[in-house]
Image (cartoon, one colour):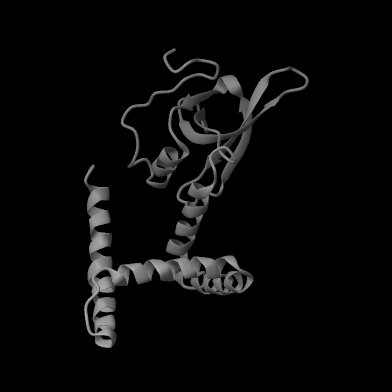
Amino acid sequence: MALIPVYLSYLVIKFLYLNVDQKFVALIENYVGFRVPGLGLVLILVLLYLLGWLASNWVGRRLLGLVEKVMEKIPLIKTVYSLGKQLGLALSLPEKQAFQQVALVEQFRPGLWSIGFVTGRIRDKKTGESLVKLFIPTAPNVTTGFTVIIGESEIRLLPWSVQEAMKVILSGGIVGAEELDYTLPGETANG
């Protein structure tokens, strides 16, 4: 299992080398007369940079919006595209800006726990109780979910990063920690 990311990285590099670099090298060799290994990959990186620059200006945003509208009309591509877009948005948010901590909260019935993200804290003016603002995402669309305000004593803080929790949610629990270790708010990690 640990070798899967390494193998996938190898496949991507192999694909880029065989299908991009070698074809660009052959094209350039026809014009220049000699081979420049690796030049195809450099040209791809430059192209990706230019596409990123184009997407960041007004014309690029309009063009990107048009491409997005087309993608949302094609049934299977719509699902894959929107999932990738949502995942990218969710994982690119700075952790301190959106999600401060990962927590477990009982949901639906006692003993049934859901993963949520602490988005802030608030104090009940009448009781003085410390409350937590918690976002509980739904899978596979992690940009939708439930926002609840719950007593701080009713959650269990997890030592996971936002990315680790997102992997668990998006994989339906297939990927993630093998043991559950949590702390109660106000506790230290060792008890």
